[in-house]
Length: 442
Image 1 (tube, rainbow, N blue to C red):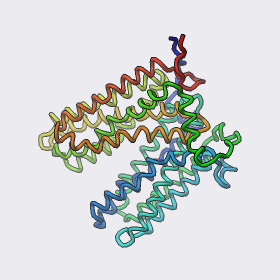
Image 2: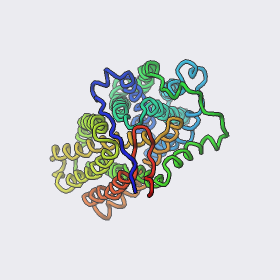
Image 3: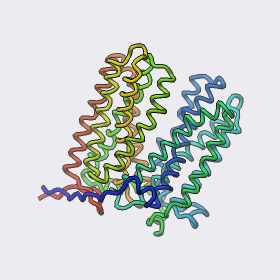
Image 4: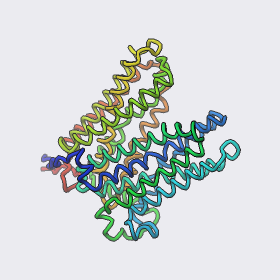
């Protein structure tokens, strides 16, 4: 049995690309805007609702307003197939949809700002649903632009990393930044400032180069069901017999991280660390650590190739949970072991960020040009779903095993995923010009 040839991608300078590649700076700005909406309908909004005395049960239910992010693949095919009204003529298909989605985020965030959740909760819910839909759509079209901007797909690593850096900065603005503003100018002012932060992203969308695929005529119009099914069928057909293995690898890659993350904060509280300690380590210190993991992934993937990076990512991401197991066993002391805490969280955060960029880049190689947003949205949902389901049972597992053995077990989940990565590496080649294909039999 002969293997498909794996062409090693040419190394792309990571830092200099920011100044030499006209796609990178816009990607940083676009990533920034995509990192803002989610928290405005999730934890940041929960803080606002808590401040005005909304019940915990209601706040928990309102966290479901983020469901649009889990089901965004349902409308992604229409963004791939149809040009946006008016703006499509001037900016092209993907950049036009990006600006429309950014306008939607601005309008919805402003709508929430001018509401009064203490007395008109229905108003806040309606605009939060709109914000979730607009934010999920913004993610889709930015991913579609990113994937179609760099061909062959193996050269995605640098662009993906800079987009991820922008996303983390936007996430920091919508989290810590919004809370900081709320204490000084109130929640209305904070949400209006978040809406205004879409403006740099609009400038980035206008300055971003139009992907070559957007210059071709769009796909022929099709029926509703066929529009949704077409990208799924194309992906399965292109991957061939290896489709189940590759999709299982994608589904399992971040499963250990999702399961472990659900119980990380309860572990920190159980160890006696204060809210200030947790915020300092996970948000401030952790932000820079995660940037380091993102930088490393962006620099390493072009040099060693996609599949070796995939194996390193899944092994490192899973093994890093052993640092949380160590913290559970040796880092209590009533919250006094601060540096043990910081080191353990740093190791896990660095590996998580590295693995995230590796997975984003790999899923980008699996998406075709014509169905970029649809297939990438489908793959991200597939990646998130199994881990999210298992995370719901994590508390019951800890009741039986304790924190230490729980985190050891989450690290072991990565073993079968690593074996899948080795199998895919052995059986599937990703060349610079071709999509993954099964090996040819004698």
